[in-house]
Every structure is written in C-alpha cells, then in structure tokens.
Length: 370
Image (cartoon, rainbow, N blue to C red; front, side, top):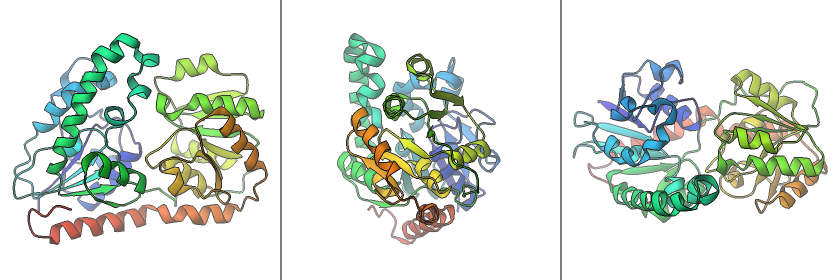
C-alpha cells in the first residue's frame, strides 16, 4: 500500500507536527507533501521521509513570511499529483485537507481546526487593530470570505474526518457539515513528568506570541494579582508585548523541550488565556503535576478539570482571569492526581486510537464517507 502524508507546512515542531510524527512512525515508507519545508526545523522522524514541496517554497521570502502567500495556498495544494497512492492522510489546519486524490484512494483528514482566520477569528488576525481599517475591509475580508467558501466546498474530498477535540468536532460539523471521530493529540507524558523541584510563586505562559493567544490578557491579570509572569515563546507580537510589559514579566524566548519541562515543574501554575482548539501546553503542564488556569472555552474544557487539576474562567477579561488566579490559591493541589489526569492524553493512546480509525476506513467499501 502506497501512503501519502499531507501537511500544511513544515516550519517547526508544534502540535500538528507531533501528529505528523506519529503518522510517520505508523507509515515509515510514506511520502510527505507540504506547501513548504524549512529543513532542520522538524524532527528526524519526519525529515527522513521523502518530502515534496509546492511552488510556494520558491517564492521570495516564503520561508520566513509564508502567510503573505495565503491566497495562493489553494492553488498550491491542489497541484500535487497523488494518483499513485492508495491512502492519503492529511494533517490540516489550513489547506492540506483539500488535496485532490484519485478515485481509488482513501483520504483521512486529521483536522486540527477548520481555518480559524477564514471562519470565526478574522479580527484576531486581520482586524483593524492589526492591519488598519481600510486593508481589513477592502483587501483581507473578501480574500478570506472566498477562502472560506473554497474550504467548505472541498470538504467532500475527505472520506473520514478525525478531530483533535470535541470542540473541533463541533466546528467541523458547523462549517463542513460532516461528522468526525475525536482522537486527542499525542502528549509525551513519559518526557513530561514531575520532579521534586521547589515551586516558585510565578505563573507561566508557553505559547507562540500571536494575537489569538491573548498573552496581553495574562500579563494584565498577573499585574493586577501581583504575581510574576514568565513567558516562553516567540512570534510577531513580541515587540508589542515587550512594550506593554511591566517589571514582573520575563520573556524567555524559545527554549529547548528540556528547559520548558523545567519551567513547568517550577511554576505555581500555567496560564492559558486564549481559546484553543485543543491545547497541548495545559496537558504537558499537568503531566508535570502543575495546575492550569485557563479560559473555559474550546479545548481547555476537555483537558482541565475545574477545581481539581486547575481553574477555568468564563470570559476572556482581565477581571475574570485575575479572579481565577485568586481561586487557584484556595485550591488543594493534588499533584499526583493532576499527573494521572494527564496520562489519558499519552502518545500511546493517541497512536492506538488513530490506528483504529485508519483500519476502519481501509476496511470500509471504497468511496464510503462518514
């Protein structure tokens, strides 16, 4: 059986790439197709596969500024020749699910989310506060509206959708009118584990510094609560956040996995101030025995048990987040219990569940869609 794995782009090891890594282990001889690939930015498990890129790879500044070519992504993904493959598995949060396959192949899409910016988070990425009022209205909005129509129209190219959370399953149903099987992403609970390290009183954010992550909210809430905040990660919002930060905020930039694990172990709690489709960071933190304070929307409702493994707050406001930080101080933290809760999201469980869905699709009559 010839297998093709499709991924939007390979520019780092985030949650989507960790799912792709598991797929590479399940199918060690598979070929990978992606819009662009920055060599050396993903794991050796992925890099050892044959990787085919699109014409986007060769456009000016594409490796560092690829989002500017978003209008070209549909054309680029549709130009891959997949006729010789029996099974196509796409790992998609943008356009990967829209590849064109042969009539005899089966296409399974592990959907991290329908395109956020095209459907329901336009303002977070392209609103007036980000790009100005006129570009937002006259340039980006028509482009994204057209992209959303294309995204919905190409959902029929997938035989079976797999969602990374019940929350994303709802989005798939709403935007694609399709059902999906939920398989939570893999979390390396063997690597992320507690250690007898002394706890500090600071809070921790581990995140890309992009608008929808709401790092500004975490900074303001910690300032109001009078607690220090450490921030791991980098991104286009770094300059703006640095300018707004007070003296009790420390920006650590990108860190190794080992250094991040140590940050989890030392923090009083990890903050998740934005809405996540799933959110691997809260599970990694809980695997280290560290509680989480999270916005009670999206995937956090499935990964954080309010009052047991952390605290959920209802609205994305400074007041609500500050109150949740105060509630955490009253919580009887059971670090062993927090760790046990995280183990249900282990890499082994993910791999077994994903393998089960793939076997189900392969056993079904050709052309079956769920």
